[in-house]
Length: 62
Image (tube, rainbow, N blue to C red; front, top):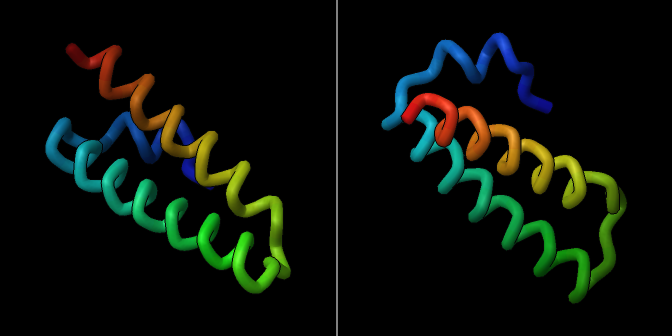
């Protein structure tokens, strides 16, 4: 889980990169969850919250 203090230190480019990596990780976790089952189902929810948090900071910096 990302902390607000960590996110505020990132630049806009770093925020975009982090969002894209988290989105790909979210896709992979969803895929494995639906195909083989997941040992950690809470990870998908956590990734969604992290992506939303990053996008909120990105929009606030505009």
